[in-house]
Image (cartoon, rainbow, N blue to C red; front, side, top):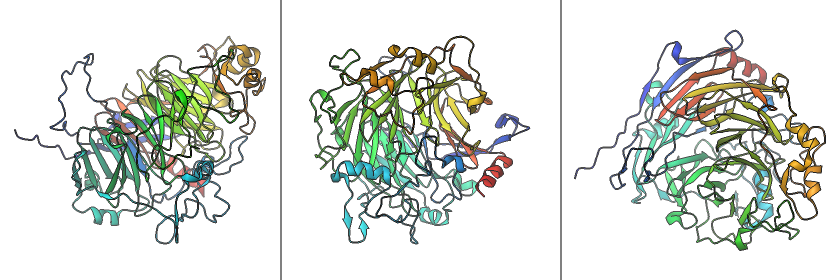
Amino acid sequence: MATPSIEMTNSLSHPDGPEYQLSVGEAVEGVYTLQDSLHLATPPPHPQEAPATSSNPLATTPGPPRAGVKISVCVINPRRTPPPFYRAGTAGSTVSTLGTYSLKEHEKESRSSNESNSDGKPPHKATNNRASVYVEEGNQLLTPALGKEGLKRKKPKTNLVKSNSQFISRVIPHDQLQKRLQEHSPEGLFLFANIDRAYQWLDLSSPTPARAQPLMKILFAKANILCHDINHFTKTTNHIDVVMGANTGDIVWFEAYSQKYVRINKGNIISSSPITEIRWLPGSENLFLASHMDGTLIVYDKEREDAAFTPETPNGLSTPENGVLHTSANGDLNSNPPLHINKSITSKNQKSNPVASWRLFHYRITAFAFSPNPSSCPYLAVVSEDGSLRIINYLKETLTDLYPSYYGAFTCVCWSPDGKYVLTGGQDDLVTLWSLHERRIVARCQGHRSWVTAVAFDPWRSCDGRNYRFGSVGEDRRLLLWDFNVGMLRRPKGGKSGAQRNAANRGSVSSYPAPGRASQATSRLRSDSSLLVDGEGLDGEGGCIEHEVESRTVTAELPPVMSKVVDEDRMSWLGFEEEFIITACADGHIRAWTRPSDVVNSSQVALS
């Protein structure tokens, strides 16, 4: 039986007309214009993959998990960093550089982590930046090995092109790959994109005809890539580390320039659950975090071997330093604590993966995001199908806050560039803004007509520390832009705000405190605004605070400044770059919208 041909060719177009323009306050800001519309070729199912038995969405035998197009953007040497707001310290923060990851280095290091040597290689020494140092100081077994010339960097061993693995179906590098890499400007944009079982490496800064031709295309056999991430700490002009998570539970560590890879969690030796999100730990060369559909978060090391894993603590319960297990609000031992620690990051058993394993009940984790200032605010925002937003201190392995959705599941999450706010989108068709420092909901943003699939802040707009621009896309095929300023929020009439209600009715906040400390869980908050001072209180001794659903009658509402249908299919990704807004849909369209010239110029003036 003849093997079906594989669709290989991407298509690039440049639509023109008013329907391909985004007007955002024309008199003030200008018009965003669609420059490139790239349609990724979607490969057919692998010949050995069982065909779908029914196209009926209500069928009892669904196909394998799939995700729309997700993008990882890589700029080797950006011409400029975002405006000063992206680096400004927040109220109560002691760190002056946040979003650029140019954090305070270890005392023995003399240079910033984002500097490079003359040969283009990063100046790795005894340690990484502070975020990684904190992790490694918790367990010396996680400290990278040192050689005569400093930190030893391992590379994947298996050649991707010559691999005979049954996991990879085919690899197609560009005929002139090396030439294109040599001609690529360090200031240009690399895109890594997934669509079903295909994974593509694209150069968005190449000449127009070549943009549609991927630098490399990887086709997997019976595995769909659902998520991926680039290590921005280790990237150089000749090195890019990428990790990918598949619906089979497999993880691929891929080094783009050498075209070599390592397969992690092979044979589901650690977890058989599909991977929904994967991210490098901020400032770490080796460690990355993956969320699985069974509700677990697992920290892996790209250089360690895998081993069969069983929880190290009985029933997965965590035992804090004081020896007290999590308890419920009435003081009884809680058999279902808010955070199970199956293996601690401080475990002495670090000869193999996993480095750490945490479980958040048995609901699917839909997304997570690291805070942008890990040295002073090492938090992780996690959203799941149970309709909750969890804030976790991933260094102390403690759950600090649990916020509920208005209804339905949360689907996406991100942090503001200064780490003060968390943004979520969900099945309630709402974009919700939360304040980490005030520990409350700030505003609900109405405008979508279906589930929200991606949210992101724009660090290149309104960057004065008081104003924020963020965007969202959803299954309604719409792109929405929002401007946020505390002074512009409209609070509905009647009722008390969340801060006022918390101050007046402390008993309405349920928590999981340690015995005898129930009052401390809420007394850490100010009686007037619940404001946290210098970040103190999030990791106090009171345990996790489980917040109430706040009524829409007392929550501020924020209307969008722009709303428009920008694609023909469900949207799946959104990103903001200096000169573009990039969107992607489930059908494979990647679209780059150029910013108005006055917006680009204004950001450049702010940096001068």
